[in-house]
Image (cartoon, rainbow, N blue to C red; front, side):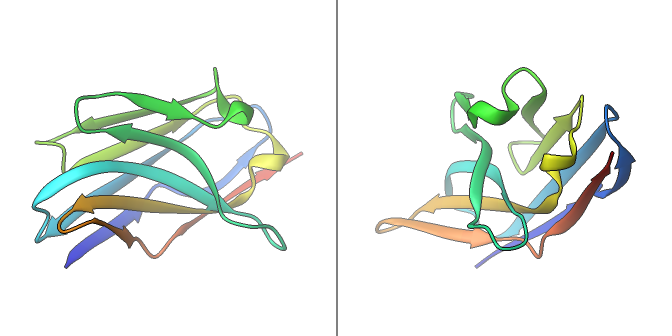
Length: 118
């Protein structure tokens, strides 16, 4: 099992910044990727940004140029620097870890609320 603990959410005004952190622990094994997803009320969970083993990153079009994903600490930590936040970024943000075992297993954090006021 893999445990993921997120931190750093909160309330910020439009145009402001927040930094999310996610710490992974447990039976990590071969980490395929880690990333951030978000889910707004009444909407499906969507990918925000992910970083693959090796450092390749990908972003949702809606956050490109504003958000930056990075990793640290032997790749057991990821961060999401969010700048120029907009009200439409308001959502619960979830950390995801994808671990290669027989196939790819997904693990999720408990989520952290990000609220951007206009």
